[in-house]
Image (cartoon, rainbow, N blue to C red; front, side, top):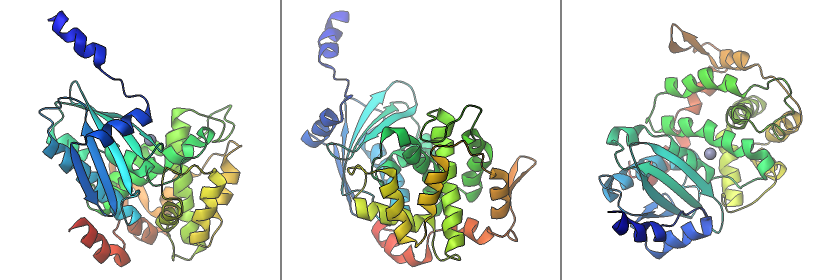
Length: 320
Ligand SMILES: [Zn+2]
């Protein structure tokens, strides 16, 4: 038994290098999908059964639909995805790179259920990373916060989850992004809470500022789409200032730039409760409740709704 396993182990490749992953997917993709302007090549590294090609395709298509609805197209022209089957039923971990092209390695347990795949958020999170340029690692929070903020919203816009679920995360998890003692600002404090939830708070603050500054004409989504179109996605490497400027220009504001300057080098506690109150979001007896008389209730409703101007084009591209 050991003897027959040895040669396989000797030749097994760890796939830690995005160039190797890209080459592997390009050489022999098991699936090729075309979704809303994006060509997706998927390779499965070994025997994934009972997670077969058909189930992987359903999962990828569902996630790609949500991300495409949010960004108005699949965020990159070409994406290489390597599925590495693992033990058990776990979804993830996954890593996304922007070189030599847009590449993701995704581990998923062979025993994962269809229900878990339907409810999965990790695939949408990784696809959201494709949309924006990469930035220096000191500002990892900028990208992780963006994926954390956008992922549930993208799913809610297509009705895959409820608005209550979106805001449940803001109520329960965003407080983990507040600075603790010794914090030196988002660019200098690389803890899990600051990176993911501190970053997500930055994007929620930007959402509100863009809406207020434009008297309701623009959303953060407009800025993010513009950044995506200008950069071409995560194969580009930009400074945070460049990304912020591209987004600000599209919504005629300086929200992204001003917020970055304010939060990058300093410990700034955010009035999260005040923001949620303005949006009309509260938790009563364990349930997320909405107040439609709140000053930013219209913004809250629109964040999780498919855009009226998008509906026909999005439906067409998603085949709805
Ligand atoms: Zn991430």
